[in-house]
Image: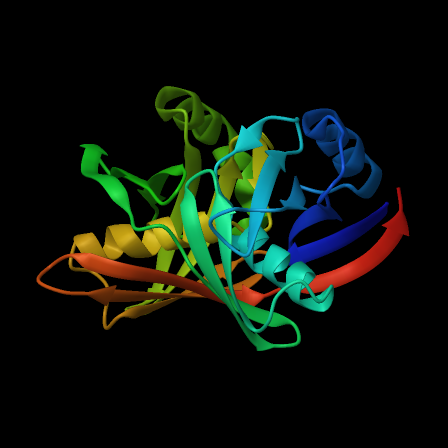
Length: 251
């Protein structure tokens, strides 16, 4: 079995074609992530309702419903392996996600609509689900090199809300820095796609997003979140960014 090592804005994954295969995915996720030092594991499978199905696991073997950066990478994996064309649909545990190839190493996915938006659940803390749960905490400044200072606070909110935790700071009306502590990884990652989308959804809901697009600068790379809306309601949420192949190994 070939094991692809891929990354989306620095968020890295071990990826396999699991169609017709039979193995314990949770166990393989732990081994593959340890082998490659990856944040998550993805297995592409057959689907009755979409072009293919995405099984996503965190590096600790726990299953997750969705991953924005992972979805872009699995889109490239499917395209490069001749499974789909330049537009595709993906069955996930959070619902059907749609993807599009922009260029060789750049993809866009239409994410699940944000739900359960709760603004100011605690002073300066917001909550939203974008396929998966996220807490968003606004800071005056965010220094990626001093992220260890945020670890204790991140663990506190991760446990309190059973969610990923995003720390963000404004650069301009349409740009932010973002740092995400991911559930299942139990650490900060270089980027989080649904986390970037969660920040955009919160800012839009608060009327603090200029226009319909937000540039999110993660430590591992830049992502673009675009919002479509009608009558003060988000009707579509798109995530665009890199989807790169680092190496392919035999497992």
